[in-house]
Length: 467
Image (cartoon, rainbow, N blue to C red):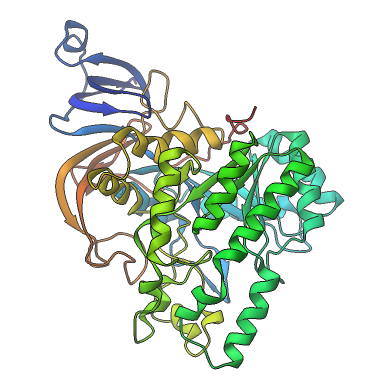
């Protein structure tokens, strides 16, 4: 049975174009676009017609950095693949790339199998996986080749968290050398974890236990130093590098310098670094713990450098690093010791709206909004043009977006499985109205119409930006 939907009268926005066009969807894919009101468009017939007059018609968001059900700090991220992907859809995101975790002493395959089991049959939208590499050895390196062939084409390493995910420079170099050969992309958490641990120990010894000290010990200079070191190691290996959750002006400067030298170096930032700051970490009565994540929130003056990086393309992607922990019972594990606060913020539902607010505020253009939230993450991680654009042949992952609707972000109304909002009380202009995933309604006029298990696992090709 063929199923057809026509979306009429909207402004179609992609990374490259804005056009008043109707969109024909057939059997889960975009079949055609035609200028609204033309005979070609008027001739289309369909079982379902969506009126998008006065609205934007945009590609579904691609969030390339989420952590559903992640075990961390003696607890687990509070969103499951079921709750987290549903919340993502409410926020206009139709694809997530989550992280499967290799535990030390175990194979990559065991980690990938475990995460496939968590997600299988649970997701409301499509999903893919990166692989966290915690144990670099000869077997791991061989497995990296196999995973790339299977469509898991990116590998995350950590210069932070000694004793948990940490890799030393030698392990990083070996993994980078392997990715230079197999076409994979190394994603780096760039913070000098060894030095940070010294500062943590010293702060606690001085009785500095409040959440704000989390930001003070994880110094911007140690993010910049690790970013610089990661770039040099990648240069030695002849490998591309993608630096995750860039938060500091000094780290942006390192990326800009590398890109000016023509290196395949890429950078991601997150809404929390663009809209929140150390002021939030300093909130009284342990409220600051809600904002503990790593890299940490920075003083407000860093924000303008991140926005500028997004405009100049020294930063290419905005992902969420969605890793929610409830305030009650989870964040509270760190009362009296900031180093025990689980690291992570909820955000998968807020990203598209916050970035639209950035358009309203004049930080970025509408097309740049779609570029950093949809098209570039899809290209970076081998999902384009299946995902990230509105073009014939692409998956019909489409959002009808009302640019004039006003909303107030709040834990009362969000759909993430977490007891607070990092943006509580923030007023934004623009809201998701209807969401299609592969042509099927997930959100219909602000009502959930999707189903658990609709989301499919999506293998990926390699990074489409490498030269």
